[in-house]
Length: 196
Image 1: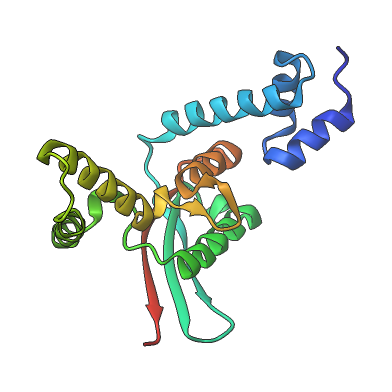
Image 2 (image 1 turned 60 degrees about the horizontal axis):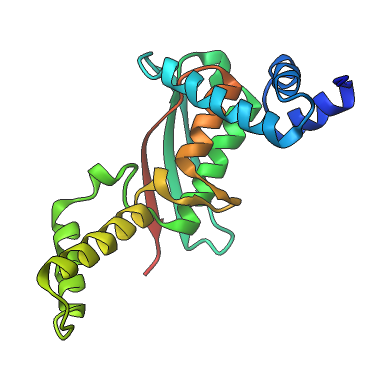
């Protein structure tokens, strides 16, 4: 099948990947756009994994204040070069992260960073909810483990569904941006402020 410039352009608009990557993915998928997107996603994950060991010593600090002036976010996102830090796509990505944090109110970046006392409190709540249940203890433990897992996924930034596209998590979006931009990107830290 002939790969047209329009097909390549449309795939690039859809995925944000480079023109040559889009052309190669379409050729590999024999013109099937869905398969080409899957090829690019797999390549993006592989690219991100290769870049994981690199040092991200540049980057930006960005801020977002919600229109009601009651929620604000500060975030630091690192990259490998000053060139990327000044890149409009990178800066727009960081702004999107700020808006996501304002809307979704994550507690930390990864589930491993959730304070143990918060996890223990959630465990106690889940056990209390099951106190009257006549299920065996091993079944209750599995239910509690499932509730804790769901809780952690809800408060860890990288596991939250992205507010502008809930089909991807913030972590998946980060992986896509690493593949598109071509450098290691790392969310270093954030602070979310809210009145009341």
